[in-house]
Image (tube, rainbow, N blue to C red; front, side, top):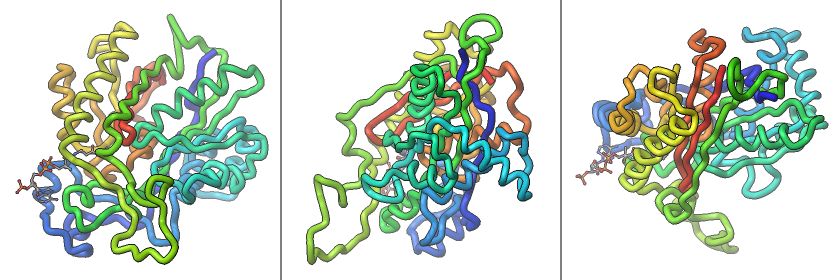
Length: 350
Ligand code: UT7
């Protein structure tokens, strides 16, 4: 039994802002040069006030489902119908998100399940920050592995973190972008180990809850609820201790890749591509030097999308897939790290 990716999709808000445009619009005390040299970011996509993580998730899901149904190209009523038809066969919908449509309930996955008409699918959200997609893959494999009848899972990473960005904090507000990426996973008869193995081969997943305070939304949950009559001077936002997260992230990438490589007996040559969470190009560079893995093995698209949190890995996967950059038999490693603190990754044979 193998858990294979049979379709990928992504959705980005229509509005793209370059660094210069963002700086001018929000009045941030920074420059394009600083942002590029410290993060590798050149632009990001930003939602309007009405669009939620669930809306982007729904669009990304339709694109992934259409591809899985044999309609990779955009547009067309037949393609849309094929996507909805395949949605009827889904056994589960999982959404990894740090900013769901509602706090606690209902889950964003249930909202998307309803919009897709996927009545057979169980649905829930995963809260694992930017590692959510890596966690979600392993959970999806477990859901399919434990019951013979479950064959298909839709896994989505969807974020609108620019809605909870503190535009007064120049070290964090330049980092984030909105977007969603999705994959359709299918249980197949291919082997998942040995010669000719396919699909999800291994996952290593970690958490260090002791670091939770360095990346958190302080206001609005049970610890700091809103009180009647309270005046809010600043909207709820994501607080980040940049340097602490940076140091943690470099170690997290090294440990994750190293653990996966040792577990699978891999050398750098065996790896086709490593798809890291796109948080900061400098994090990836620092980690890859410690790992002694050549730069060209790492896929980076942070310049275009900035940090889309749990969506960054599936967006990159879809971009590579649609760009013809993945061939059958390629060995991919994913690496996520973020709020929790959580980190981890997956080994996938394409
Ligand atoms: O998705 C996972 C979560 N996020 C991350 O992985 C992000 C991890 N952290 C980082 O990527 C980096 O820490 C940042 C990009 C956030 C900040 O870069 P840094 O090189 O660590 O800057 P810093 O916080 O150490 O600040 C150095 C200086 C400070 O000035 P002084 O005090 O030395 O005069 C900051 O005020 O850089 C200043 N600074 C800026 N200057 C211009 C911070 N942000 C900016 C800015 N423009 N946007």
